[in-house]
Image (cartoon, rainbow, N blue to C red):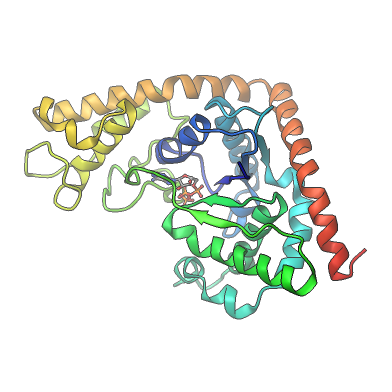
Length: 324
Ligand code: ATP
């Protein structure tokens, strides 16, 4: 038991990597106390488009539901529906965190490098992330290597706060999810498929039409070696296609190569598999997105369930620091 918290940022539309590597697993392995967060406040730490931010949040929420996350069992909600709660605890935690700690975050260094104008939110979003975790009493946070440091920060802040003011927060722990390799960009298979890459043929979005998905996969970069085998270092493009096919069919990517004779066959097999994998998800998502009343009903339900969890802890935190 305990509470696990997982989130998806709305820095762009959800892609195949988000689905295969995260959302599908979350839905498949849900427990009643799980918390799933559409992290739209995190979608504005760099230049953003307000209309798209709102659209991506609706889409990500619809994706979670369409993938099978049960809004009656889990707590599944859009972060900005509780913007006051998340905002208030962030402030309290910012006054628990030091400038030095925030500035040292590797993600901040990487994302701010070479930019002449950096939003302050890019520096402080790990504290918002700590608030996301601590508000819900999450004890386990499944995250990839790149987010580990942020969970460590949440842990440090929870301990410091509890020590200074009283035991209010559950001290969270980062857990490495059992995942396959990260899905790579189809055009640049040495980098991971990412929302932030924008509209490129290398990223397959969950809402892409079957035709577009097919075209993107058929254009995937391979190599000159002309052998279908799983060797991520020597053959990143081919290995990525095998990885995707393996994830779609539930077979280890090392065991697939044998039946496939050439790159054309590999690409078209992967294209078929991805189209079929995404079809039902896209259809359910579209249905929900076309039914705003139902989507809003589920969003309100999620927000209500989230608030029930968050409010007592927020009130306890405000009280012990001397507010209100
Ligand atoms: P961005 O593309 O904006 O950098 P992201 O998609 O990497 O963001 P999140 O929105 O935080 O990041 O990811 C949501 C979930 O999807 C996380 O659990 C993350 O591990 C997973 N994920 C993201 N990209 C991939 C990928 N290429 N392959 C597998 N899983 C992925």
